[in-house]
Amino acid sequence: MSDLQVELSQIDRSDLNSIKQIINSGFGLLLDDGFEFNVTDFTKWYDRIVLVNKHMFAIRVSKSETGSSSRSWLVGICGVVEVDNASRHGRLIFFMIDKDGHKSTLQNHPASRHAFNTLLKYSFKELGLNKVWMSVPSNNDISSVLDSSGFTADGIRRRSAFINGKYRDEAIFSLTMKEFMEKYK
Amino acid sequence: MISGIIKAEKIHVSNIVSTINRKDHDYAIYGKHKRTLDEIEAEIHLWRVVTASDGQPLAFVRVHLVNWLSRTVKYSIVFSSDSDKVKILYRVLLDLFETYNCSKLTTDIIYDRSDTIKDHIFLGSNIEVRNRQHLYLNGKYAHVVEMAIFQNELKNE
Image 1 (cartoon, rainbow over the protein chains, first blue to last red):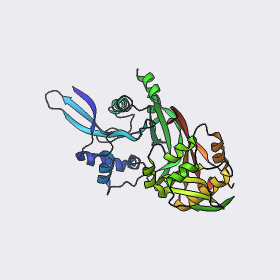
Image 2: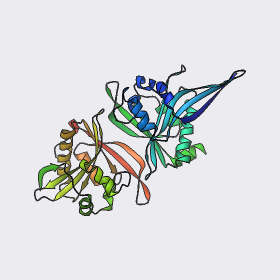
Image 3: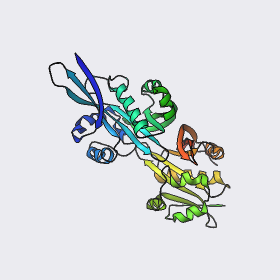
């Protein structure tokens, strides 16, 4: 009998190899919101984004099994970036890493729902944000998950993401604190 | 009368603030984060000035972000008068497309600035995103409209 537990923790340098898999998924470019991002400057990404931005987390899953010690592994990263302290909003990023046999999308991984809700609570209750927003490639079926989480579609940025050699549209979703409190009260 | 000169020159922030004495334009001048004048001075090279034939500034343009991957430039523009806004905007858009060799220009406009939004739409811009409660201004949250235009969508003034 195994028990799966999910937690958010700080990203360590030892996690970089696992995170590098995101690059191969084609979504690595979205991590840095427009800055040049490739394998060679991956360490710079860590120094600039993770060390400076304290709101970036590793999603870890631990499994405790009867008669043996529990082990934990990294299944994704998430965080709040582009925090606007004056207007109290921030952009959420959420990436699952396909390491333990699950499809790398928010809706399919068993840990994702819990991690995403934890990130929302952190954004509203600890950071005190008034609104969080996400940008996702418009062909990503993550929108159904965001809808069920109370997010509202604000619009589509045409050809704003360059992924795998192609321009893609980005859909913008947002959730205000009021909507969050009504949804999760 | 626009002389057609668009200068990317270093100018004093104090001149900008005194020239454009409107609360409405705080957002465009200071950006999302309320920054000090010294902080703006540090990136003053990003400002571009549209001047009239008599040398008077008609508008100021600031480039917020250049995304070389998606070839998108985010800018904001502040007009010092209400006359010739469409003409000035057209010249600025042309200049930005040429300077940055980009395919798309985006800008944020506060939701209730309907005249400004109409001017952008007149030149071919489209409303892409309506960011709810995106800006804390004058004690309350305001919606912000994100407008974008591709190079092939730009219509002549």
